[in-house]
Image (tube, rainbow, N blue to C red; front, side, top):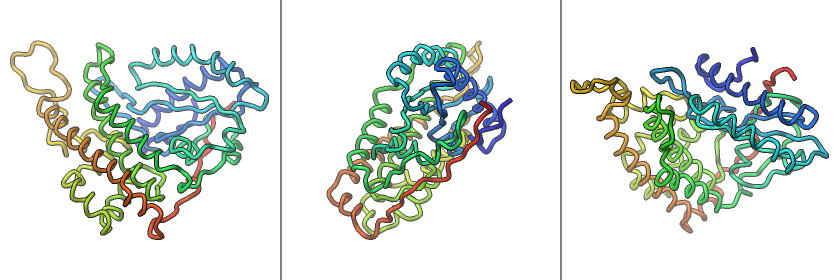
Length: 337
């Protein structure tokens, strides 16, 4: 069995997610061949020990998808490898439908990794990757991104994508035997909207801590208390008090803490007329979630307006905004090759 990847501070959740990653890595290596790949990286929140694995009535489920990056060797044909891997990734997504939200595998040349484009997505990729297969030294070859070089339009793009997902792309395709996943996926979508709204705002200010939990703490303890944030603070209102609960849910899969904040329960509803097992999420929680989702979207619109305002852009370039650069601590925890 491979060593745990430290994707969560809860050993059982880490083991569950690590085994999913192990399965994906095995398929990628078997499909592409060892000679084509220098290393495989795990990126995103799980690489920062912030995986969203929840304990459902019938076992664990990962709301975090599995994001892998194949660092291909010099001289390999990326398009050919992508075409070769696509059917295998599609099969993986079908296989893991009941265990996680999805699998994505990107193909990158060593040149692309050494010279990343100044985008939020690539910044997140090079900030704290974990080598899960192959040459650990690939981490030292990753290029860096200076946060002020990331265009402000990237923040607006991130906000646009999350609001679109929240309003238009509600998940509906869940396994029949796990109907409660719809509620979990809805909560997860809102958590992403909340945390990425904060991320977008921090990129405008050129100060972005590595982890989501640290970003929320910095936003609440510093950014929102500044005089120039007075209007944003007023518009966010009491939703500011919800943000830590969304952060704990997103970074640790702590559903109980979130539901306690929403004012509901994870216990089955006591419906005497029901002859079938009642839904895992009660009606009271669904109502609370609906209200909080609306408030989260309203808060996101406020942050988006702040990001796109001329005043927001001026603040981003002021001396008061720290210029945080560099990568977080990359971890090498690869399985035997």
